[in-house]
Length: 389
Image 1: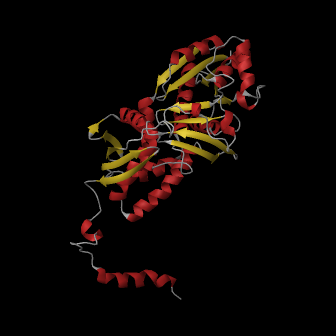
Image 2: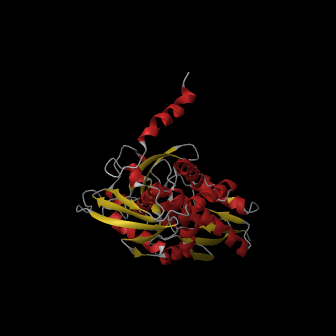
């Protein structure tokens, strides 16, 4: 019998995929990844069984996700098109890694996913899988099956008495992990329409956000966040705490018409309170400890790194080479950044590091100034020489 390992989320598309494969004579093995989403896996597992899955793997990948995916992205300051902190994109190569692993264990000939033909995730999962094992065959039902709308999928599940937590009134496509949430479909497909309040999950609206400002400090050691307000936390707990604190202020919402890899524009909204504050804090400490040329080079690398993640090129030589550069820059990224949180926003109001290159006696315009102003004229003339006729 043909055997397929399906990347299963428990949502509408992948639940339909289970039944669709079973109807076509496949033995369906589901793989579910715990990436820190607040998910009760029991109902999803039950749905998969009802739909026809023969076996379901559920693997806790939270620590691996943080250590090998989130932290490298944070050290790179990776943000796609200035807004998207890449939560969903970061999870896909890790899911692909374990799809291949389960396929090997199950001696399956096929792997499958529930990504659409116009999305980015199909590229991320398939390219990663091909790099890890090019012999496995990949099936993407949503690219060619008979269902044209999510409403048709709902009717299909209802016909076969398969439960779902999606309704016709609330047809958002949501992907969530500890680093952030991606939300699309429904009313969001019109870029002129304000996102409905029920689309958001972990952030307060401006109307309901905390109005009394507060301060917090975030400490880093060698590029890794280790403390909030002087108290040490494991990275997972630190991210959760920041999501809660910042989310209460309405921080971390972005609304983006993005350029998808596949060649179309798509409007999505994102929630990533902790990610936005941590990347900002990381940049602030880097501003103290990196020399000018390294800092400027790293800004360019951040753009390339974000593209690599977004484009599904995680397991490539280029990414490994950039990691080598980034890791070298992180050795002295140790210190504390202080933020003021207010309704809908945040601002860095202080930063310090034992490795700071900032010297007050050179920067000050007051008493104690040790900068030799007399050298400035010669410097300017030499700097201008290549551009003079």
